[in-house]
Image 1 (cartoon, one colour):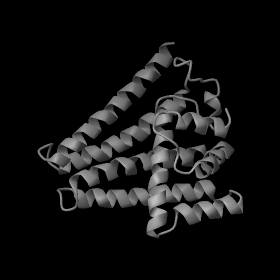
Image 2: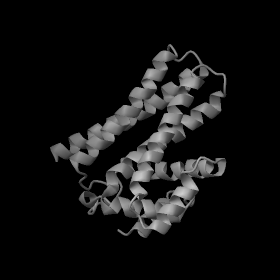
Image 3: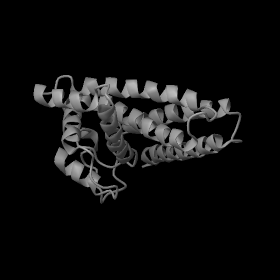
Image 4: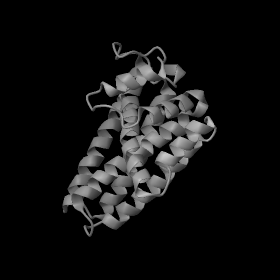
Length: 213
Protein backbone atom coordinates (compact mmCIF):
# COMPACT_ATOMS: atom_id res chain seq x y z
CA UNK A 1 0.00 0.00 0.00
CA UNK A 2 1.35 3.42 -0.93
CA UNK A 3 1.05 6.51 1.26
CA UNK A 4 -1.42 8.09 -1.16
CA UNK A 5 -3.56 4.95 -1.27
CA UNK A 6 -3.66 4.95 2.53
CA UNK A 7 -4.69 8.61 2.73
CA UNK A 8 -7.39 8.05 0.11
CA UNK A 9 -8.82 5.17 2.17
CA UNK A 10 -8.62 7.35 5.27
CA UNK A 11 -10.63 10.07 3.54
CA UNK A 12 -13.28 7.52 2.59
CA UNK A 13 -14.07 6.73 6.23
CA UNK A 14 -17.09 9.04 6.19
CA UNK A 15 -15.48 11.99 7.96
CA UNK A 16 -14.54 13.98 4.90
CA UNK A 17 -11.24 15.16 3.45
CA UNK A 18 -8.09 15.61 5.49
CA UNK A 19 -7.23 19.16 6.54
CA UNK A 20 -3.82 19.12 4.83
CA UNK A 21 -3.04 16.08 2.73
CA UNK A 22 0.43 17.37 1.90
CA UNK A 23 1.37 17.58 5.59
CA UNK A 24 -0.04 14.11 6.27
CA UNK A 25 1.89 12.76 3.30
CA UNK A 26 5.11 14.10 4.78
CA UNK A 27 4.40 12.63 8.23
CA UNK A 28 3.36 9.20 6.97
CA UNK A 29 6.36 9.04 4.64
CA UNK A 30 8.66 9.87 7.53
CA UNK A 31 6.97 7.16 9.60
CA UNK A 32 7.70 4.71 6.78
CA UNK A 33 11.35 5.77 6.87
CA UNK A 34 11.90 4.49 10.39
CA UNK A 35 9.98 6.97 12.54
CA UNK A 36 6.77 5.02 13.01
CA UNK A 37 7.02 5.03 16.82
CA UNK A 38 7.26 8.80 17.37
CA UNK A 39 4.59 9.28 14.71
CA UNK A 40 2.19 6.86 16.40
CA UNK A 41 2.95 8.46 19.76
CA UNK A 42 2.06 11.83 18.24
CA UNK A 43 -1.22 10.35 16.99
CA UNK A 44 -1.97 9.06 20.48
CA UNK A 45 -1.34 12.42 22.14
CA UNK A 46 -3.27 14.20 19.37
CA UNK A 47 -6.29 12.05 20.17
CA UNK A 48 -6.00 13.03 23.83
CA UNK A 49 -5.92 16.70 22.82
CA UNK A 50 -9.02 16.34 20.66
CA UNK A 51 -10.95 14.60 23.44
CA UNK A 52 -9.78 17.07 26.08
CA UNK A 53 -10.73 20.05 23.95
CA UNK A 54 -14.21 18.60 23.44
CA UNK A 55 -14.68 18.25 27.22
CA UNK A 56 -13.36 21.74 27.97
CA UNK A 57 -15.69 23.28 25.40
CA UNK A 58 -18.66 21.53 26.95
CA UNK A 59 -17.98 22.55 30.54
CA UNK A 60 -16.60 26.05 29.92
CA UNK A 61 -14.13 28.13 31.88
CA UNK A 62 -14.71 28.31 35.61
CA UNK A 63 -16.19 24.81 35.80
CA UNK A 64 -14.87 22.33 38.33
CA UNK A 65 -11.59 20.82 37.16
CA UNK A 66 -11.26 23.07 34.11
CA UNK A 67 -7.91 24.53 35.15
CA UNK A 68 -6.42 21.09 35.78
CA UNK A 69 -7.63 19.80 32.43
CA UNK A 70 -6.33 22.93 30.72
CA UNK A 71 -2.89 22.32 32.24
CA UNK A 72 -2.93 18.71 31.02
CA UNK A 73 -4.04 19.96 27.61
CA UNK A 74 -1.09 22.35 27.41
CA UNK A 75 1.30 19.59 28.45
CA UNK A 76 -0.20 17.40 25.73
CA UNK A 77 0.35 20.14 23.16
CA UNK A 78 4.02 20.32 24.12
CA UNK A 79 4.44 16.54 23.92
CA UNK A 80 2.73 16.37 20.54
CA UNK A 81 4.70 19.23 18.99
CA UNK A 82 7.96 17.74 20.29
CA UNK A 83 7.14 14.40 18.69
CA UNK A 84 6.17 16.04 15.39
CA UNK A 85 9.44 17.98 15.38
CA UNK A 86 11.25 14.66 15.80
CA UNK A 87 9.36 13.16 12.87
CA UNK A 88 10.13 16.00 10.44
CA UNK A 89 13.61 16.87 11.71
CA UNK A 90 15.49 15.05 8.93
CA UNK A 91 12.90 15.64 6.20
CA UNK A 92 13.84 17.59 3.06
CA UNK A 93 14.44 21.20 4.07
CA UNK A 94 11.60 22.70 2.02
CA UNK A 95 8.98 20.28 3.35
CA UNK A 96 10.29 20.48 6.91
CA UNK A 97 10.35 24.28 6.93
CA UNK A 98 6.82 24.48 5.54
CA UNK A 99 5.53 22.08 8.17
CA UNK A 100 7.22 23.93 11.03
CA UNK A 101 6.01 27.28 9.71
CA UNK A 102 2.42 26.10 9.26
CA UNK A 103 1.94 23.96 12.39
CA UNK A 104 4.61 24.51 15.03
CA UNK A 105 4.71 28.28 15.52
CA UNK A 106 3.25 30.15 18.51
CA UNK A 107 0.80 32.41 16.63
CA UNK A 108 -2.93 31.79 16.70
CA UNK A 109 -3.19 30.77 13.05
CA UNK A 110 -0.50 28.13 13.40
CA UNK A 111 -2.12 26.75 16.56
CA UNK A 112 -5.50 26.56 14.83
CA UNK A 113 -3.95 24.57 11.99
CA UNK A 114 -2.17 22.37 14.53
CA UNK A 115 -5.51 21.48 16.15
CA UNK A 116 -6.96 20.63 12.73
CA UNK A 117 -3.95 18.40 12.14
CA UNK A 118 -4.63 16.71 15.48
CA UNK A 119 -8.06 15.74 14.17
CA UNK A 120 -6.40 14.08 11.18
CA UNK A 121 -3.91 12.29 13.43
CA UNK A 122 -6.82 11.11 15.59
CA UNK A 123 -8.35 9.50 12.51
CA UNK A 124 -5.07 7.67 11.89
CA UNK A 125 -4.97 6.56 15.53
CA UNK A 126 -8.54 5.23 15.31
CA UNK A 127 -7.61 3.48 12.07
CA UNK A 128 -4.71 1.77 13.86
CA UNK A 129 -6.85 0.79 16.86
CA UNK A 130 -9.36 -0.81 14.49
CA UNK A 131 -6.54 -3.04 13.23
CA UNK A 132 -6.61 -1.68 9.70
CA UNK A 133 -3.48 -1.58 7.51
CA UNK A 134 -0.86 1.14 7.83
CA UNK A 135 1.72 1.64 5.08
CA UNK A 136 4.60 2.09 7.54
CA UNK A 137 4.12 -1.11 9.56
CA UNK A 138 5.68 -4.03 7.61
CA UNK A 139 4.22 -6.57 10.04
CA UNK A 140 0.75 -5.58 8.85
CA UNK A 141 1.48 -5.60 5.13
CA UNK A 142 -0.73 -8.63 4.60
CA UNK A 143 -3.74 -7.08 6.32
CA UNK A 144 -6.54 -5.95 4.01
CA UNK A 145 -9.88 -4.28 4.59
CA UNK A 146 -11.63 -7.37 3.21
CA UNK A 147 -9.90 -9.67 5.71
CA UNK A 148 -10.89 -8.63 9.27
CA UNK A 149 -9.50 -11.85 10.75
CA UNK A 150 -5.96 -11.29 9.41
CA UNK A 151 -3.15 -11.65 11.89
CA UNK A 152 -1.91 -8.58 13.80
CA UNK A 153 1.36 -8.69 15.65
CA UNK A 154 1.34 -9.11 19.41
CA UNK A 155 3.77 -6.22 19.81
CA UNK A 156 1.41 -3.80 18.06
CA UNK A 157 -1.48 -5.03 20.20
CA UNK A 158 0.48 -4.41 23.38
CA UNK A 159 1.39 -0.91 22.21
CA UNK A 160 -2.31 -0.18 21.67
CA UNK A 161 -3.13 -1.51 25.11
CA UNK A 162 -0.39 0.53 26.79
CA UNK A 163 -1.39 3.79 25.11
CA UNK A 164 -5.08 3.29 25.87
CA UNK A 165 -4.27 2.40 29.48
CA UNK A 166 -2.21 5.56 29.98
CA UNK A 167 -5.05 7.74 28.74
CA UNK A 168 -7.64 5.85 30.79
CA UNK A 169 -5.49 6.21 33.91
CA UNK A 170 -5.16 9.96 33.44
CA UNK A 171 -8.89 10.42 33.00
CA UNK A 172 -9.60 8.13 35.95
CA UNK A 173 -7.40 10.29 38.19
CA UNK A 174 -9.33 13.33 37.02
CA UNK A 175 -12.56 11.57 37.89
CA UNK A 176 -11.32 10.88 41.42
CA UNK A 177 -10.41 14.52 41.83
CA UNK A 178 -13.95 15.40 40.89
CA UNK A 179 -15.19 13.02 43.64
CA UNK A 180 -17.32 10.89 41.39
CA UNK A 181 -19.79 11.74 38.63
CA UNK A 182 -21.90 14.24 40.54
CA UNK A 183 -21.31 17.08 38.08
CA UNK A 184 -21.65 17.41 34.32
CA UNK A 185 -17.90 17.13 33.97
CA UNK A 186 -17.88 14.03 36.13
CA UNK A 187 -20.46 12.32 33.95
CA UNK A 188 -18.70 13.32 30.73
CA UNK A 189 -15.41 12.02 32.09
CA UNK A 190 -17.04 8.79 33.23
CA UNK A 191 -18.44 8.19 29.75
CA UNK A 192 -15.02 8.81 28.21
CA UNK A 193 -13.43 6.33 30.63
CA UNK A 194 -16.06 3.71 29.83
CA UNK A 195 -15.35 4.15 26.13
CA UNK A 196 -11.63 3.75 26.70
CA UNK A 197 -12.10 0.60 28.73
CA UNK A 198 -14.18 -0.80 25.86
CA UNK A 199 -11.15 -0.23 23.62
CA UNK A 200 -8.89 -1.94 26.16
CA UNK A 201 -11.20 -4.94 26.49
CA UNK A 202 -11.47 -5.22 22.73
CA UNK A 203 -7.69 -5.10 22.31
CA UNK A 204 -7.15 -7.68 25.03
CA UNK A 205 -9.73 -9.98 23.50
CA UNK A 206 -8.12 -9.61 20.11
CA UNK A 207 -4.77 -10.66 21.57
CA UNK A 208 -6.34 -13.70 23.24
CA UNK A 209 -7.90 -14.69 19.93
CA UNK A 210 -4.53 -14.48 18.22
CA UNK A 211 -2.92 -16.66 20.88
CA UNK A 212 -5.67 -19.23 20.56
CA UNK A 213 -5.50 -19.29 16.77
